[in-house]
Amino acid sequence: MGLFGRLRSALGDRLKSLLPGRALDEALLTELEETLLSADVGVKATEALLGDLRRAALDGKAKDAGAVPGLLRQALLRRLGPASAAPLTRAATAPTVWMVAGVNGCGKTTSIAKLARLETAAGRKVVLGAADTFRAAASEQLALWASRIGCDIVKHAQGADPGAVAFDACQAARARGMDLLILDTAGRLHTDRNLLAEIQKVQRVAGKAVPGAPHETLLVLDATAGQNALAQAKAFREGLNVTGIILTKLDGTAKGGILLAIREALGLPVRYVGVGEGMEDLEAFDPAAFVEALLGPGG
Ligand SMILES: Nc1nc2c(ncn2[C@@H]2O[C@H](COP(=O)(O)OP(=O)(O)OP(=O)(O)O)[C@@H](O)[C@H]2O)c(=O)[nH]1
Ligand SMILES: [Mg+2]
Image (cartoon, rainbow, N blue to C red; front, side):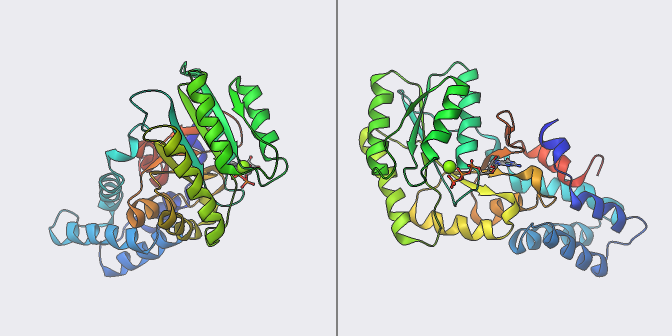
């Protein structure tokens, strides 16, 4: 059923009760503004969407509230853009290296497992690098996933230097003729400078070991964190060259609007969305399906 079915959108329901029989006037726009903000769309994206609606009303393209869902759909699709659906970057010559970062518990390790399963199913040789050496059970958690998926793993003892793990994993990926290495990293507060320096080192080491690596640096954000996810993204971006977002736990929130806030405030593409705890619960982000789910069927 996927994203479509699992995003129980509060926004879609709210629009259905708000719009019927209304004129498209300032009073309605104000209520729409509140509705969008409460769906986590964020200030910047909300302003942009309201601007689109206002222009359509002034141009005479929309006479009453009945036009709002259609206009919103167009505006959302335009803003989410086709770039969001682009595939992740791969190296011209294997191995490709992707690294994953994010705050504690946002879903990094689970998302890596889900990605590895997709890639393995597509016939690629995948190795996971357990550069989360901080938490005692972290590399065991990753190793468990690797054995379930049937892919390789490189790990060191707890407390080892994450940079050293990244280096070994890169070497192993080359030596074993792997197509893809995915590096897991320890969860860290986005406000902790020392921990950001540590993950910068992982990024640097990967680049020295494999030309052009990491080919993607994916920031994992938990959709249930709401607007705090935006603050996290801004801070990570200052220290790391983040290339895209994996938005997890979209099944656990009725506020999918955060996806727009990310796109509008950061300009970063959302590449994948997590819609559950299972290995299959990851989907390449499809703007059209997302807008459909957000506005509700026929919305
Ligand atoms: N509902 C739901 N739960 C998820 C999703 N992704 C991850 N989780 C759950 O979130 C919890 C944390 O996931 P992890 O993958 O361990 O998170 P992490 O970022 O690696 O955590 P640390 O390594 O401790 O920083 C687990 O219970 C996962 O099952 C998702 O898309 N939906
Ligand atoms: Mg983890």
